[in-house]
Length: 200
Image (tube, rainbow, N blue to C red; front, side, top):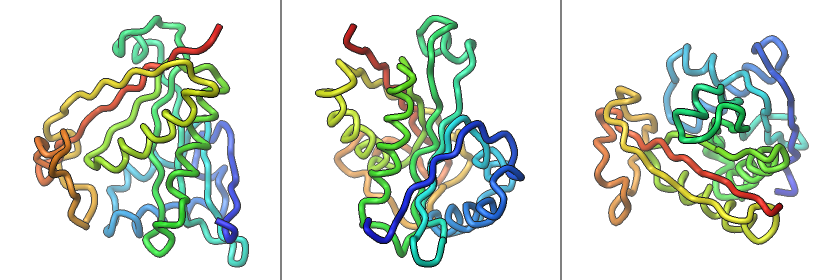
């Protein structure tokens, strides 16, 4: 992590606001997943209330990325909360393959979760085919449970065929986890909802 610095960006509504980072983020996503992603999905990834970038100190290369999008009042109600509840959809951290295993993934997830906690978010929602994504977020939540978050509750919903394809080129290890029930090649995923409660 000594080679990496973190940049946090706010209220990004278009990729033009990202300047030169825009293309680098796309390259990072492509490298992490092992193949190009559909243009509409990449376009959605390039805007949000909070974007965190991991950038190399020497070459200024974007090697990690995550983002938060505010949930609408309709989404809050759908997830069992009041319309005025603060909530975020989390694009779980993406890290270029040569930089995986260095702690960047966990760091970026923690940066995003801390931002949501500072806003007293009651909901944090993400989707994934990968049990390591869920496990990484639980690890961050457990760390924060003794600090900012009083308690959290996790819900997991199977969404058959949501993506219409496998997201990552590399195989996923799902044996012994709830993710083993997913047909990943058909695009199944879990929608994961963290319900957060705070000390008064």
